[in-house]
Length: 426
Image (cartoon, rainbow, N blue to C red; front, side, top):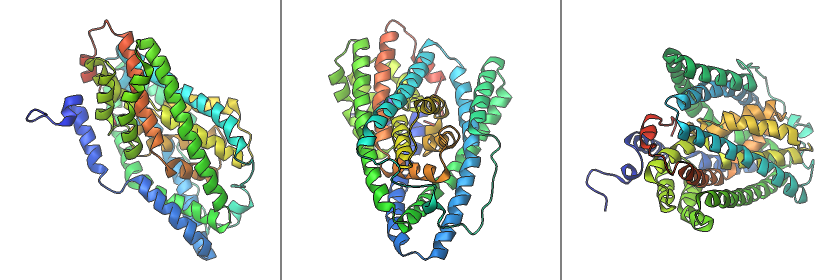
């Protein structure tokens, strides 16, 4: 029975993290992004069949303008979130912190490479190459009434390099004023994403579905989307099994039992589509795996910010599918560049709804050469079933924690670091 004055949240995490999760939970009482995307897909499929041309042109105009806004906002998202995240990771950073960040990044990029190899081997067996011409005549059949070019401040690669340079510079120079400025700039970017971009994202998807439905391509796209989602779920589960085989071997524990203890966290993450909200459930499963509480209290919340293996699997699998149906041969060299950069750009992005996807849009276009129509199609498939990405993320967090617990079994530190290094955006 919970003692008086102590909530279930307080039993597992620090008061600061508890307050952050309670705030997130309150926000989730509103209609989530996933239901709105489902409604947008359904309405677009139906209305696209009967919509007159002038309405399609209006939607196409919005589609083009929103794509320009995304190009403008994404580099700012990277600058505003990644820069303070790197600066925060450096302050008071001990060996445990660096181990968690290093293992999380390694797991994230390995997930991307694993997903690419599996998807590029499996998908061609049941997806026809070039079956949809997204950027060809079908996409250009409906012209917008006008288009407006909004050049971004810098491209996504420049933003990543600049974020890394400034973040590391803040660590070594202790530039608190600059750090405070980027913290506030990050809050402005978050507000823009949460209040303007995310609410309009279902409308953007709706315009895309309407155009595909009017062009007679929707049946093919929906069938392909279902195959891609099923493939992504299978790849993520296999990757989790591999993770726990490695973590269990290193930690000297039964991998099957450890993975079984994380089933509640997986199912919760699948249903609520959020890594941060599942932290108490993840912590409970991690403690059942025999991890010391001071290690779990530090590692699990931090991993919820920097460990994005499931989201990376979703992105890589969906990107390979979009390239295949567009008649483009997936290149390992391009994907290697994309995966390595995406692992960095996704740091602290979970602090924003849809942040991982938003932070990756620029890389899709600048590294993989996606057109706005291909990016919109990827968003549609990615968001059609959002839950398995966060589910894989949170389950993988416990595997990272097992390894960290083994590496620092003789270390008495952890609680102090957990209290001083609270990841932002949780």
